[in-house]
Image (cartoon, rainbow, N blue to C red):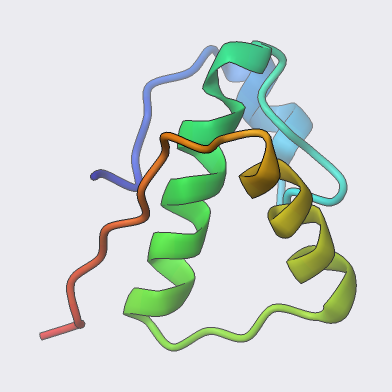
Length: 75
C-alpha cells in the first residue's frame, strides 16, 4: 500500500488536515482503500485515533469486507 495518491488540486485543498470523519474522497468506490491506507499509516507510525475517528473508520470497515489493512513497522 501507499500513502500517496495523485489527486486533483481541488480535492487536495478540500481535504486539508481533515481526518475521515470530516472528509472522504468524492469517489465512493475508493473509500475502502482510503480508509485502509489511513489505518495503515496510523499503525505504522503508532498514531492515535480519537473516538470519533475510530468510529468513522469502523463504520467504513463494515462496508469493506474484502479490504485488508497492510502495514510495515517504521524503520
